[in-house]
Image 1 (cartoon, rainbow, N blue to C red):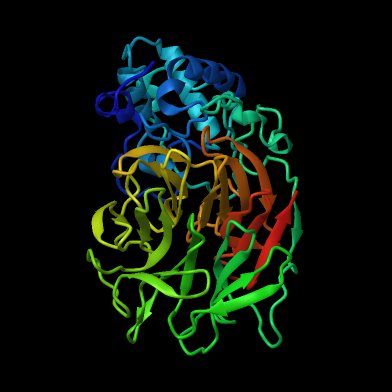
Image 2 (spheres, rainbow, N blue to C red):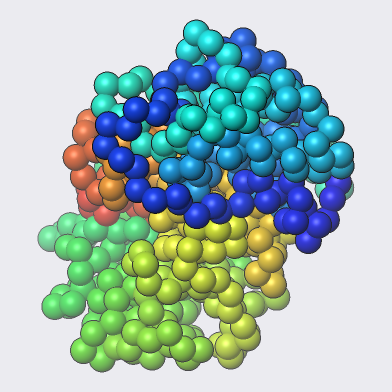
Length: 500
């Protein structure tokens, strides 16, 4: 069932479009809620089959959305329906689904599909099936947050489809074999195998130098590893240290540069000519707020933005987080590090001339809030680590939203290698309501496919109490040509190396 985006937005996708919250929940409401066990496991199993047959083409096999329709699982979906009734959601399903024949499914089938959606989103099963009458379901309130003492269901995701063949022949799913578990449940959060070994003491710094907080690491074509640290601390404001350090493939320090130029080095990127790009996410006192391109020996080749200025303009940045360069030299900059402030993607010519921008702060498909990292795949689609919204969003070069993926957690770092393997660092997911709220996901690194969205490996964060702090583990991430992963860590002030 293939439909055009402009059509589905007026039909089936309207079912899961952002809905206004119908007022605040009243304390101790007598109404049953989505946490009251309103469906059975058997019903959800039936619903999984009905969903696969009637809904998965538009909303994705894993309920994670496609370029045609948004996700119907995860925090964004749940909070969009918070405060309304299960009857409201059921009524929308009944009238608009499936897209090719709205209203053609029986009330029982619609109830089964809804049971599957509830299970995927972690609401618990009970002893009685979900009623197939709208009037009965209207007496059940949709509540996003888990009440105290209620055990949620295990987060479920339907099995992912087989990976498509690679362009030019060959099967992408065959590489690398070590990262491919059995297909069933491969997108269930935190469930993937960890075939990696961690080395936190690989890099040898010069005498007297300690590593500062860092969210930027990258590898050049020769295997050299580049780190943008915050001058042995978490800021370079009053330091005379060189924040941009180069190490050889054996972890030996080679050289450093950039002293006096940065306040808060944030993102680092190596282009096809091994030039080094660094973003500075803060601006003050005539310094920072820029994107700087260096030659490998430290010569400044290009600067974007105005030093010391933070402004939402075409020639300046608010808080530039990340940079990436397309094959034709077009420069992509992710601007916006603070929630509830403007967030955007900006494009510049190879010479630094502003071309266009897109994005606005929000949670709807295509909106962005804290674009903390970006990466380009082999088709030059832009993958945006939309951190505040707990998702990776995929755009074309003109800013058209193609897909939204929740299965990679809360993204602080995003990297895609030449084989379209996708590496995402989640340094902030937390269970308590508040900052970093993403309760189904553990912090760590997820490795998967930029082609099919399947997560194939998970490297868990070693922090014993992630709910006790805002960040831990890698933020910045890169992988070398041999699949060795490097993770830049803010809290721990180190760069960890992960080998298979």
